[in-house]
Length: 111
Length: 114
Image 1: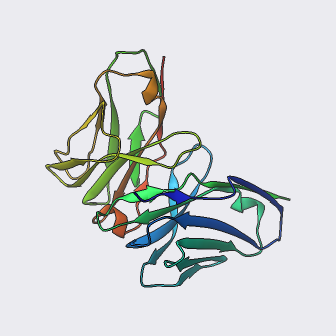
Image 2: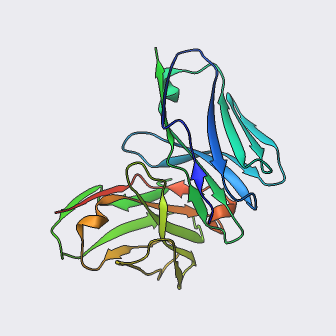
């Protein structure tokens, strides 16, 4: 059974730092991996989707990488800003099209 | 565009009561789904639909029913509320099958069962 883990559960860094969020999964037979952002009291917003054949995807200050063989993905945030404070979740999709989710990393950027 | 709209935003029920959580999308998406989010856990899929008239069970379907009579609407029914169903419920939609394209989420319904 696929399991997705995100460590740490919470992270606090000063504004301006570059940071990396981690996501690991137990079964490498995935179709894609997605990163989402969740603001307090709000729904989830899709940030990046990496197909299983891809190694990375970039959107602005965000870069997500995927290493299927090791069961890992990282979300790199450059030059962090207070507005980046949110919970970041990753999810993997297998051949049955359903998403398996990590519990998320709560990120706080201190001004 | 309104995107995915969930109502109500908050609800308190007593054990044994029934209710329907509403979800509507205006993007003509074929795929819709319901998740629950509990503290310290990832989202878990309750039910999903790949098109009008078609529904299927997800990971945690017990105690919930769904129907999909139109492309736009996908209501979730709690048959007899239990305290274990206290959670935040999210509805999501995507153009086609859920795991292959980014999903659009509603703002959630926060449900407490006393």
